[in-house]
Length: 273
Image 1 (cartoon, rainbow, N blue to C red):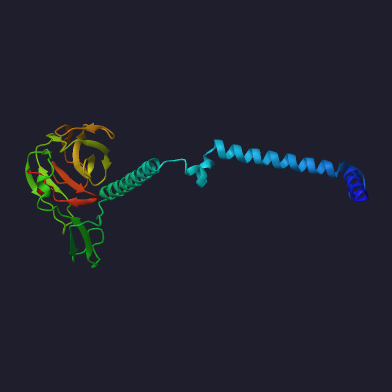
Image 2 (image 1 turned 90 degrees about the vertical axis):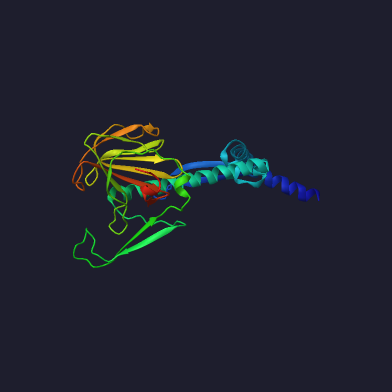
């Protein structure tokens, strides 16, 4: 046993030299003297430093949320509150995406097809205006309010005048035209935020307002816009003046559209002009 211990001790005391030489001329580049004790000390030091770094990362960085031991520190109420915030952000993001999509289609004059509880699908057999030689039927989807919807919301009359054209899905006229004198004042139907105040080729000076309860109101062919994009308005605030701007107009009037949850509704079902 004594000789075995002496042999082991001798091996630990033995020194070894590691030499790196250049392949072409065998010139010595690096020479390192090592022993088993040096190797063991270096390995222990490396393991200690690696463990310390991992501990610091888990203790003082967001990586601690990835491990169940850290997640368990949060109470059930805190986890529930975080899930509620995530759900709320997802719903808000969906609403913003829907609003952006609908706004783009409103400005482009396209038909909006949405999934709603009450829809009326009209199939038009005549050729569309965009393709006079086409005979393919055009399908339009529009939401119509239930009988009780008209008493659930309170809207201000945007303009007093004569209804020159009504809401008609078959003709893709998704609003009402109110004829009035040039420069008559147009008012906001409800409080809201102006999400567009700009010029469009077909609608001329156009103004769009986002209202509560997922309503959007559209005002086209204005002579002058009195409000800018991003402004907050209240019900009855003056927002524009009657005009005759844009391509799709034949006289001073307001083309007014009302949208609910991404689909056009008949303004006459909500507002008594």
